[in-house]
Image (cartoon, rainbow, N blue to C red):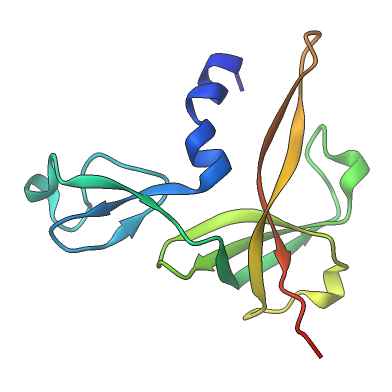
Length: 136
């Protein structure tokens, strides 16, 4: 990802900012300009919405054959997270063993280092999710 594009996306990456349609009240992530349900009626009526940082695992998979650059992270867990606000997002689940993750597991957003960009060494951060530990 190019640095200028990354910096423009900081509010979304750091705070899970989506949009809510003022007509139908549905919440979307990533942000969009037009509601897929209301179409033209939503133009100019899509307002920023700070999404919940909590949700449940809707589906997941464990990656054993990584994409380039992720070799040192295997195995890692990628999941579709159903946020409390409604949208589903794809995110990595961290700080647990793959056996601990189940469909329906409660998760919460954590802020993590995503990578480093080129020779400049600019470190960029973003969201991942971790299992919510139950209190005993």
